[in-house]
Image 1 (tube, rainbow, N blue to C red):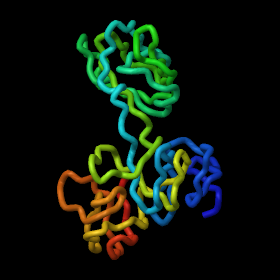
Image 2 (image 1 turned 120 degrees about the horizontal axis):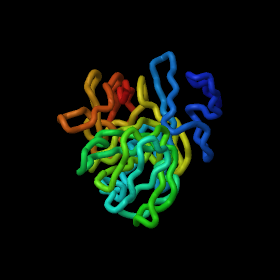
Image 3 (image 1 turned 90 degrees about the horizontal axis):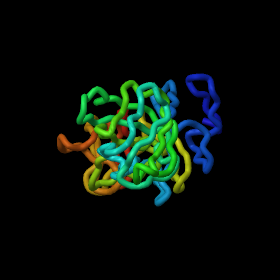
Image 4 (image 1 turned 45 degrees about the vertical axis):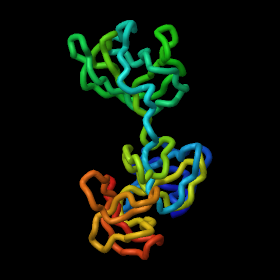
Length: 252
């Protein structure tokens, strides 16, 4: 593949699957499919550490300051609004939740707003106090008004600031596997479906036909042994330990 990809909607993306870029060329989470069964999602690497090719990536850890926050003393946000103000546990940076999601967890009042989820176009900085709230710009209008009784959570786009999947504390969704080494804060394509090269664990490599999941080291694969692991796919071509196996990825 060259340095351009034609999306399913006919839009040309000027970044090939073997390229990384410092500037964003497509929406985060955008996917491209190939006739051979492979699928790739557009991601941004975190700013702390790069990602080695053939290692599984996961969504970044969630911001605890935006989880289950009751809107005490906040004014009612009427139904039909696409720009709303919310209270959080601490101030957050502008654009942190761009292309993320707002979930209404519960409403201690009438309960009419429970269970709604909205995509966030963008956000302003703030949120620590009623006087300095965080403004959200939503893709769709509120279906039901939010009140001071509403409890909400904000979730960052899972394709933003992705990290190598940790072997301990794997709580986030697996995102995909890059075909090349990725630099911190760069944009890249992560493979989510189809045949992929994935680093095998140092101790026990999976055999052909066995399901694989996180191994003893970050981002590497091993035969799935329990019910709590997130399965990544099926081993097609086994590998010697600490080398690359061919895995049929089934992340979506």
